[in-house]
Length: 388
Ligand SMILES: *Cc1c(COP(=O)(O)O)cnc(C)c1O
Image 1 (cartoon, helix red, strand yellow):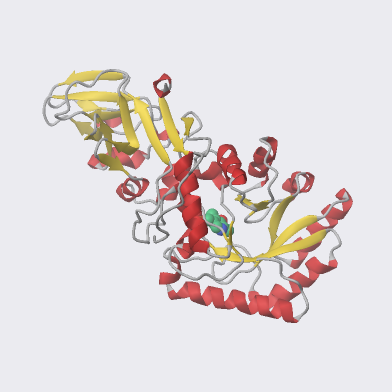
Image 2 (cartoon, rainbow, N blue to C red; image 1 turned 135 degrees about the vertical axis):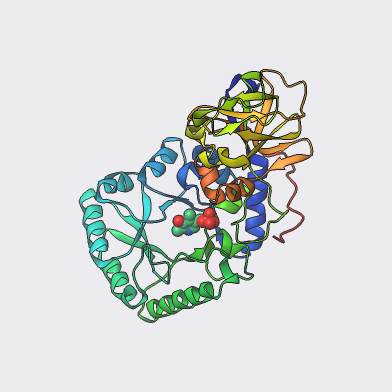
């Protein structure tokens, strides 16, 4: 019974498998490499990685070596790729656990190669091309040189050539097509120079859900697998939100008009009302900004109630308004459905001027993750629609 917890996130693995199937259908002949960085965007990387393995995904993306290590320790054997780069201190762990990493300069290729040789093993690397994002990656004109350095390092094995798109709305932005064009050129140049390119990959969720067919041998969706589309794309009913966030009511108080609620009395009751206190605050991922100026709501008894006053570290308060009969122990829903109402991560993100990624990634470690539908149903139906 989840109400043993003060605050909990329910993670529906049936929804995750559904979203994975939708992604696979959209990706066509390209492989889907789920991105599980940042604890699977707050959903819990170990459990979702196990679900991915059981669905036969060929590779998983992580953010750093500690995430890779956590997955290896939980028994994940699938190839893992640190999507960005690694710092030197991470190399021993990457080598020990056979974790692949992006490479974006000649010097880096030699460092990695030396470390691999010293450890007596081979490190799989993905040549990371900067086609317009700027953050990481080798510029197209230097790609051949870095690929040559990788080839010359006995300790390295080129497993892929990758790039990352900057546009928020994928292929709806012509800049994405230009990035793709540059990547295609690099791949052609490498092949011309006799360098075997095992896998080309560039598409994130925004690209996957804005183009058809896609360029590349694999796609790297993150957020869409969690049932949320990047906010610049039109919402889609084809995807199912995987996570819902709840807390139980721990206290009820009738206050009279004019009573201040929370730090700084940023909100005062405009009339007599009943306040419910929830044991979940900004340390648990409730954005501080949600408390200011009536931006937020939670669902209680299937009705929307306003979040009032400043969000505290461990608590927040709700004006129950006309909702009657609420008791201590009743469930409040901060993300997800209750009755006919639902609150999506996108709604909370817009209310706080941020992106849905930040909403789920910020859910803190005190929030208990409760997993639903761990085992696939014997006849999990294939998704009826692949349209996003
Ligand atoms: C995070 C990340 C992704 C996934 O992005 P989404 O927008 O969540 O689909 C793909 N590739 C790289 C390199 C990333 O860092």
